[in-house]
Image (cartoon, rainbow, N blue to C red; front, side):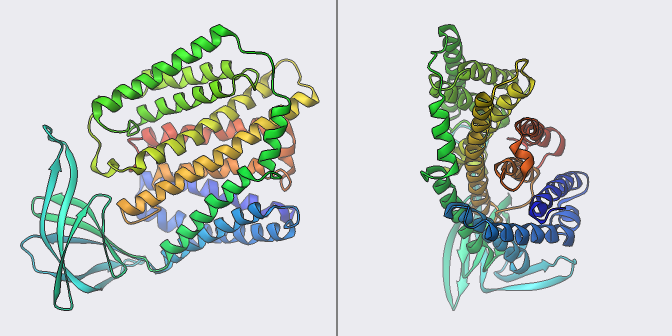
Length: 467
């Protein structure tokens, strides 16, 4: 086995382990999945092998790689280092408070081996009041609210804690998780190193991807320039354009109706996110209609299928106010980033299917054009999907106190991202230089998208099962 392939083999084994972990979590519990899969010694060892061998390959190819490519791989190392620091040094626990109880200065924490220890804060906290805020003329909760009194150095301070608005004090964070009468449950987190390092990795990733997409001599811009040179001059047929516009207006109108009736950004469940996927696919097809042959046909076909699946098979809840945890300005950006990423993957997969099963063999120029189009779409998908995953991690940290909880939807989104990152390493994995292998791989990898979108909701559940 070539040493050059070791980082990619490690990633494939990690994909398998993560998929197994999501099933173990469903049939057992999160604690068992964490202990035996997600943070097990063999899983951490595979991550270490992937990082070490990957960095070695980056060092060997540093003259061929642009600075953006090096920065991108460094960003992954920084993110994984932050996750390791969180795993090693963070403290998490639950704190139950009642309005009639005295102030407390600590809680009982259980380590990975189940041993209990009392952890103290450098202050005391007391629950003064708590309440469920309702939407006007409705019994649905709009938000959960609690007032915490912090007592430190003979001084008392009152803090308002709500969903997506934790209490931060002296490195400790208190997240309101549940209310029952005059009793409130808080998640307490102390992570002195991991969050800062992880967020630095997120920033490096976004910076590196922007440079990858914008740098003139970069591979993405070269692919884009090559596609513009071979762009079709044949205008699309008017009936197909009309059908595409009609479907686009229909899907967009449904989204607008749900947003107006519910009074929220319509991206709170699986039905609405599928509608957004259809809208993005059809809008993309309209945008490149005069440049890429067959884009209009692909747009109404894919958009119509997604629209139809959403309409016929996905449960449609009537528009209603958002759950408190979803009532955040990050909802719209998170969902749109992820949906655009999946739309690019969907277009790349359909292009692969057309190329793989076409009756007439493509000539050399046409084959290169198809490969360039697929790789271009994969670059875009990895940027948007990656940015959406990272923004979701930031949002989770604001809402629940942890930026990664190995929820099945999170896990399978990461699996999808990892699988579609591999074809962009054509210089290291020669198999992806073969067009037919690339087509077949993109089609098979699309099963991960289907699992993320539908399999998790109907088979595995989790915190994201509503989406």
